[in-house]
Image 1: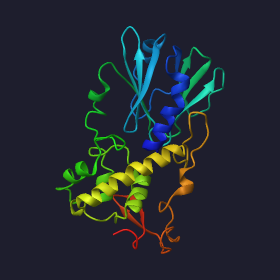
Image 2: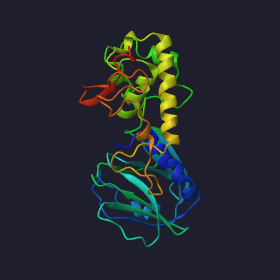
Image 3: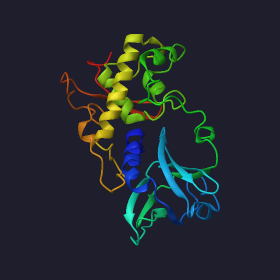
Image 4: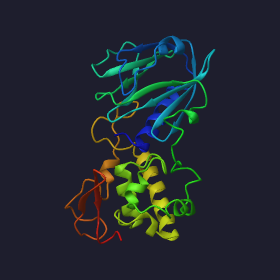
Length: 274
């Protein structure tokens, strides 16, 4: 599933081609995604100007200036990607929606599994039901060691599962939680409330650094994810623990272990993570 680095990479890749452009037409080939594409979306967007693209967690928010302004909310689901293609490029069987722009380019949603979403919201997107209860952004100034310490005092669940709770912190999916915990030297099984403030600070720094490195590498391309230009990310080439069960730890040489937590794969070094 595309996680925060992949979504942020997509946002940055689209920005130069999309912001300030006028939507000349919308083609909807598949109405039934995770939720139905809103009826009348093509009519609403035709002739509108795309003023900005923001990100909230794993959601892309397109600010639309029109007679009735609003926000186009896009989620990439498990297999989706947004790509820039030239006008007239034939659509494939998994290409479900096009935004045709006045610069001769098309923003194309490709989603083989159809778990993505394209929604419309006329007001403040932070009030949309899908976004209203999201937690703090891990790259924001609000995400600090003191903040994490305060918000984990009554959490007995394992720290990895707490870190992936979008109601607490958004966008830290499974891959990046594994990697951040390794770099922070914290056992993913440790109850969250047993982390002291110093460890919370170290974990916040590791989360931020891991996400920033992943964004710089264009995210991870494990299956379907590609950038807006169709190129894959390469952060998976730098994984310290994820997907490396049985291989030597890059720090101590001991074997990387694998277990299941909350139906998700966890990878860690029992020597380096305590």
